[in-house]
Image: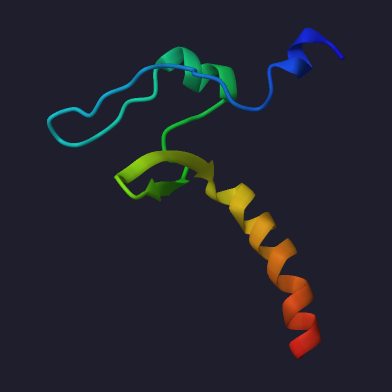
Amino acid sequence: MSQEKDKGCCEIEAIVSFDDRGQLVIPKDVRKKYGLKAGDKFALVSCTNEEGLCCFTLMKTGDMQGMVKETLSPIFSEVL
């Protein structure tokens, strides 16, 4: 395996904070790296534990549509 594949799917890209309006800014170099542009839509998915919020992640909504279709299509085909 190459060293690139050994990194896994998760890494810290940047440290961000909320501004006075409660908004997060994704740094320009990260947006450029992944081709993100104004208007792109993401779902915020949270994970909690007994202490409250543990972490959250952003998922592109277009990617979620495919996952939902893959998951629900077999179920609906059995019902219908």
